[in-house]
Image 1 (tube, rainbow, N blue to C red):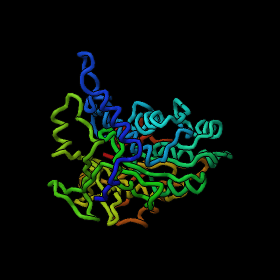
Image 2 (image 1 turned 90 degrees about the vertical axis):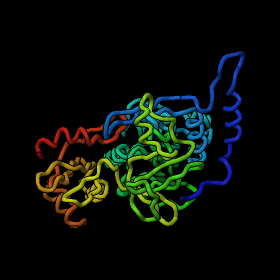
Image 3 (image 1 turned 90 degrees about the horizontal axis):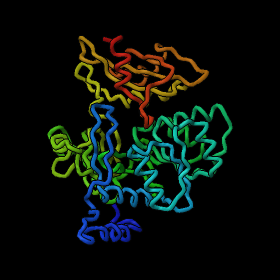
Image 4 (image 1 turned 180 degrees about the horizontal axis):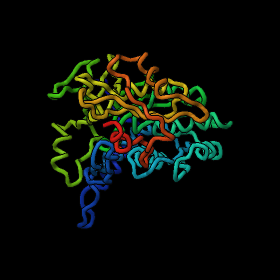
Amino acid sequence: MAPGPATPPPGAEDSFSLLAAGAGQDGGVATTQPDDTAVLLYTSGTTGHPKGAELTHFNVLMNCIVGARIAELRSDDVTLGTLPFFHAFGQSNILNTAIYCGATISLLPRFEPNHALQLIKRDKVTIFGGVPTMYVAFLKAYDEGDWDISTLRLAISGGAALPEQVLREFEQKFGAPILEGYGLSETSPSATFNRPDRERKVGSIGLPIWGVELKIVDDSGASLGDGATGEICIRGHNVMKGYYNRPEATAEAIVDGWFHTGDVGYRDSDGYYFIVDRKKELVIRGGYNVYPREIEEVLYQHPAVLEVAVFGVPDASLGEEVAAAVALRPGMSATPEELIRFVKERVAAYKYPRTIHIMASLPKGPTGKIQKLELKKQLVPAEA
């Protein structure tokens, strides 16, 4: 595991003092303790029922301190607040961190790429944080207009895996680097980040943030070495107190202080982590494991593809078969057969999707994530 800095980030000690000053008794009335619950953030429920993650004041404070340091956030920065503030990314990384630093937030109640680009120009926005589908929408808008966003110095991506093709195309067209990070509602949310002052590995979720450890484990819970694929587990100041009124779910998720994420990934020899896919989204086709993200990365390389989601559908002989749903770029065309051939030429024979659905758009939740469960509801009956 890559160690964090030996000393706390700048500003941490003063913040610790302020938090500690609020602890204890004041006139016989109990005041805020660092481990008191500050907020209940409900998981997105993309792979099941939402659960309320109890984040403490200490969880939230540390996310602000470390996040501000990584982004080198200053009081003269302007961030664009278009992520929902009921979501961990929008609330902790955008709203709370900007307030902590005394930065400005330009608010956009609902993300729309053209409006967002207008606000970036008007308010001289310097930092944008968004989910991958927002970057895809920016690329679509770029092709349809002429935008001046020269004030933007940094973009941050989280909430889901950012396709490498989208990252490279955005940076080429918009001229601002994207730092991809990783976290969950249960980890306040930040756990890892690529850093502006260190090597950035495209496709990686970066290094553990200060004060946080990660490890890769197999199904028995044994730690795995560099390059081995397994479940990502997290320990540190960012891990939630537990799930609200869900002691059994808490005990299942947090074992010996380690939060089991349900995400599959690996660590390279430099300590950088990479996400392979959600454990629950793994497709097992005839006994072979197919990770949807790998196939999605290939489909994003096709010039006509704007958005894509890969998932498993029931199959009588193989157990599961690989399927995909695709939305095309405006003015471009591609047939399902063409896209299937495109993937077939680039992956192992058991991995390519046998069915691809062309859709006008893919269903998304309020945070902009593509909803694969909703896609399955729409498309699986036709596949079964």
